[in-house]
Amino acid sequence: MADRPKVLEKVLIANRGEIAVRVLRALRELGRRSAVVYSDADRASLPVLLADEAHRIGPAPSAESYLRAEAIVELAREIGADAIHPGYGFLAESARFAALCGAAGVKFIGPPPAAMAAMGSKIESRRLMIAAGVPVVPGGEDPLASPAEAAAAAAAIGYPVMLKAAAGGGGKGMRLVRDADGLAAAYRAARSEARASFGDDAVYLEKLVERPRHVEIQILADEHGNVVSLGERDCSLQRRHQKVVEEAPSPAVDAPLRRRMSEAAVRAAAAVGYANAGTVEFLLAPDGDFFFLEMNTRLQVEHPITEMVTGIDLVRWQLAIAEGRPLAEELDDVEIRGHAFEVRLYAEDPYRNFAPSPGRIERLRLPQGPGVRNECGVYEGEAVTIHYDPLLAKLVVWGADRGQAMERLDRALSELRIEGIRTTAPLFRALLADADFRRGVVDNDMLDRKLAAGELTPTRSALQRELTTIAAALEHLDRHGRRAARSLARGRRDHWRGAGRREALRGT
Image 1 (spheres, rainbow, N blue to C red):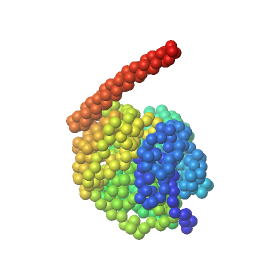
Image 2: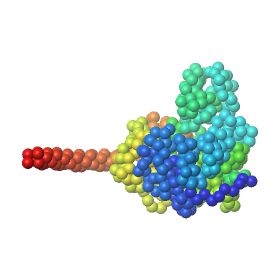
Image 3: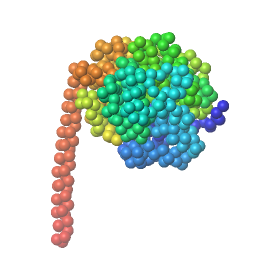
Image 4: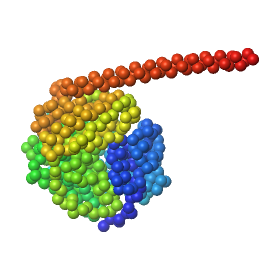
């Protein structure tokens, strides 16, 4: 049995934005003290304003701030923090960072370093899953040393195939190959991107599963060997392998399939001695077969929809598990109630190829009312920079069924106002008008196909809001310009008056 650590009275959050705010709120409810790190770009950010303590960690570039593992661990020791919560992104899935925390006597709120390392390698995790009886996509188990090896592996399982980075994620180092003619070029491109993204150019090959859904199982595991499943999330609406909209439960999963996927996810977690919150991701084929994709060894961006349909606070349980508490009996048979959606509000323009939209948030009005939850990391007047991921907030809605959840999402989006920058909100209004989305008939590539075909155009109301935003921005600029002109004129008058006084004094 693992040693029971002391109660975590003070936690340092090694992250920023909405996830830092989410963890801060859980700590505040539990009566625990919170501290955050911040870069120069985040000096006036919402987490800094809400935390009990805030500590500068470096300049804006993440390599000089939020990725400084040793400096963050040392800071935790200096301020007397019992633990570090990594959020997601940055150092959240760094086995080295988790090991540094342990060596310093600071509790890492996440899985053991060995479990992170095992699941961090796509190739190693495939081997472990095969041994544990978890279904995996047909393909190789070893890195491909040359285009010739890749060609032989592809011929053995048949085209089309996917080349994937062994250390990858987020679509980096991934290439679709439909025939032998394109394999060599795709192999070189995948290795090059993998090297640039992860510092590791190892790639392997899998059979392509045509038009799958991305369905993931949320698990909790304590430090005493207990693992439970909290049901699934459907994350199939993706743009270039990045999730955009998530929902729970999945429209494509019935009770027997949920049970089988949950059992596989529990076996996967147990196979690596997992502890804390984690997510086992699967590809769900149109025929109902499912295959292990990867395990995210951290809290997921989309965790709120699981909380909405289960009533379980995942961040609280992360803290409880880190303190050595066993899972409660109430988690043994979790019931899914209702339906929830999450849409990710990015500072991007979806109708200009998702171009970044930095700037100052001139106006922010978040939706309210029954079934609406805002996970927001910004405030009105804050400047959005280009230094970090453009995720501003997550709009989460719950309904008694999928239909009511969509109605509430539509209503919530109509109430939302973000002015001064462009966001992905108009895309979600367009999706709500899409027949396939409304019927739940989606797959991992559907959003890219529809965007390429120009099918997801802004609705009339979205266009009207865009015009309102532009008008408000022009009015602001005009007003600001008039104030600046008056200020400049006053400055010149004061300058000449002062100069006249100085001349008069010199003449006396």
